[in-house]
Image (cartoon, rainbow, N blue to C red):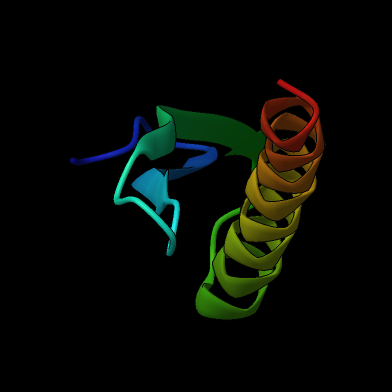
Length: 68
């Protein structure tokens, strides 16, 4: 995936499977776009923020899946 100029994009598909019975508890693709200035330092910071946002959304979804 190539991000447009001025943006960092992080995308990942995460799955959680129950250890007891192999049941699929969660399967979701997460994608976040963060505005970024040009240059490696700004782009790395934008990707770090996008990754953090994805992990926060995953933890929220995991909590909801655990209650089902």
